[in-house]
Image (cartoon, rainbow, N blue to C red; front, side, top):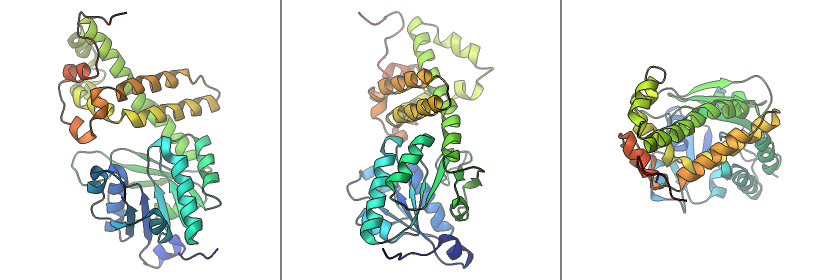
Length: 311
């Protein structure tokens, strides 16, 4: 096998343009890529066969015709896909690297369990691998979106952290490959778990006719969540199809730690139901404009106040 790409760290130190491939350029992946372009990298992606929405997200990136073309030209490949697709995508990256005779550094930035990270590393067929996780919104220019952090672990994590990005905090964690994913599973269990709890609790309160009183009682403790409840729940619902697999990855992480996994297995069921609702069919862009919490809960297909489900 002939290695046709360079050492990313050496290239960065020498001021050379590093070639980064994003798989795949959705909302977060594309925002990462555009920031790396601003930082001086050449960023590639393939959107052949992808939705018009994904094609629109990929503006500002260099588009190529196939995954082989994208991987074959890359010094670094970043995997940013739904958690349920992570292992299969790793296998595809590994096959493209073998087919094109290159050995890029691959970083997985997905919401997966440490055990799944091990399966990904195996699927990459010997390519050097960095474990990563993203915390926060897509790192774009939109004001008020909050900070975005990239956590990295593994022997070559510093090479990913060295890539310049104007809107991304980079932190290399002590510990082996898997540490960054363990962190993601811990934080996501709270972020997405809290959203699932609010969905269930507010739905029950609305069905009983006490939603307004409930929110008034919760407001001092959860002011941000209550103030933006409608848009938060709608936006979460639009991502429910991703959260199902993420909850299962969290459950696996809990089980591996010797903790009961049933809580997050049940939350996966919550997100499955939400994914099948009308809100689950919306894009995040569509869902973000829904501010009426009661209307959002109704759109989940739940019974109205005073009308319990039949059966």
